[in-house]
Image (tube, rainbow, N blue to C red; front, side, top):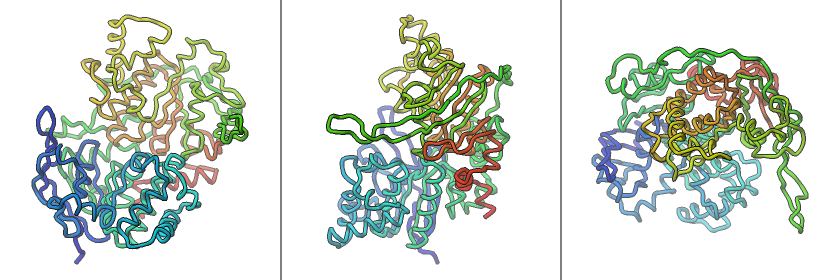
Length: 562
């Protein structure tokens, strides 16, 4: 018999709000055995993280009604424990890996202080022994220079390195249960593969149980023994991963799988989850276009050309504050994009993708080389022509002013150097909302009143306000659920067909790139190491790094084939 580490029985929980109680969990039941890796998959707002937080009792008790049902973790009735008792098991018997390590790690403390503090709190060791344990843990997470990372502040480390630090901290006291909340969401596929292998290896070696919270079905297929599918506070399906994902029984599970770009024809319209149809439980759960989109003719002319584009950042300064050494982020890149096509830039964090994208829109100045837009250097373009190049940033939450209503955010570019009337701006915002699939009635709402996918639509609408010809899209779907990702990809393809837009598309998700891109350029250590047609580069790569990248991509088919 496998020992039960976690048992949740008929858990119901309500959040308190000004509008009245909101039922976040609707009678869920879950079990995790010793050494078992169990996944909980679903969209944002489905209740995944709320479930995870309940295991450690991290939700503010003044913001919730007293939950009903029971939660047993390692034999503890955690709902009956006081704060001191909970602190004794948090970090020791139960550890948590949070979704965003930059906010989970204290920015003013070095890594060594944060890991050592956990070890000293829960283990009877000296500070010197704690240091040795920390360094070994960092080495175990495949960090090549543990001493440097140990001495660093969080901001001095990449996202992948910070996540490794979080995993080292999670394993520091040999816990019996690790709760991993979206541990690989924003990581490159190569780093993601390393993190998943590490989590699986460490869990198996130490017989640690893992609850993995994610919206990535391919990650679940690769890592989890069993999976629970969550929708609107309920588990609609659960069982062995191969059964649930290989032969889904519930319409919602089928809809999630159907929204993935993997295995779909490039540029085809993806199925998206329709909540209205799901609640009625009728038919196939997809959103079809109201009418077919007419693809406009392309000229085939080159719209953007990079000639030896180089970006360097100052690294060290002399006594007078002048830079004496530089870090080369982009190293003599030569690329071109034809009108109406999509060029995707792929590569790991720190390879120079975003630095190159920022140079295209003028946020970075080139140290060498040139970027030409319609055969003219972007530095020589007038204001009107520069408006034809717009950017959509990775995180709409931080790129939208939280104090402004949607109509003002979307029309802000129209006010640069001009003074259009408020009614004119509101009318334009209503048109933009319709263009990106938002309701006209939503133009007076603030950003926090929208979901992540809706905020990304707002960001796209803002970029479209000045009728651009070239859109730079920096990881526009990296943090979105698969169903919302499908909506955004459909939107981008429709806009490209209707308006002849050209895209420079940055992503670390190879399946998304394969679906949307005509051409692909692979960046590695600031250089483009391979470029060509999407199908050619992604199915028959010639460079060793590209092959490594492709092998690291989580795949449903590959997981079940293994």
